[in-house]
Amino acid sequence: MSRIRVLVADDHTFVRKGLRAVIETEPDMTVIAEARNGREAVETCAHSKPQVAVLDIAMPELNGIDAAAQILKLETNTQVIMLSMHSDEAYVMRALSAGAKGYLLKDSAEQDLLNAIRHVVEGKPYFSPKVTATLLEDYVRYLRQRGLQDSYELLTDREREVLQLIAEGRANKEVATALDIGVTTVEKHRTNLMQKLNLHSSADIVLYAVRKKLIT
Image 1 (spheres, rainbow, N blue to C red):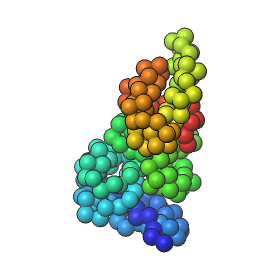
Image 2: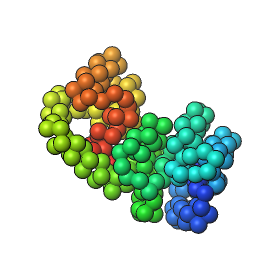
Image 3: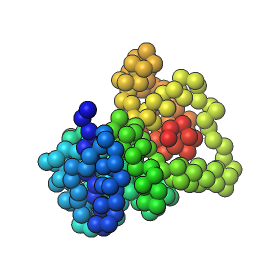
Image 4: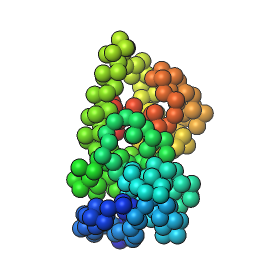
């Protein structure tokens, strides 16, 4: 059985070694490299081509979010998990916009990391439960403060199916195959649901799905 190849990047040696120890307890995973900063992480991904890169969000020389964006431009099919001390929406959105598939809080990384790696290697997003809870609380507070209501109930059954599949990381063609409809129809449903929910990007769709607990 081939093992999932993982890169761990953090400027603190203690953290890197701790994450390596957690990962290498699993027979289906191996840490192929470590990096001390964002620039080193990008360079290592370019020649080592890990399946998953676990990046600290705050690293010297190049921060984790910018490193993620550069790694995803390498076309190495590396999936990125971000490690952070921050659970607020601004940080999560920046990570998603850069292309990260996972977002873990450092204080729960040991408990969540293995599940996150297995999810993102399949192209599925994963967030620490604390992040999900915070995003939901912030969203409810936002709606109440503005006297608004969530528009999820306005979606058709098909639009809800499309929403979930897109949030799970499926491309339009994959959604079309899963639902046995045309790609053009998927694009139409996607446009309609984004308008109804006031969403503007794929990152917005994932964030909304996390708030609604449609995905992990």
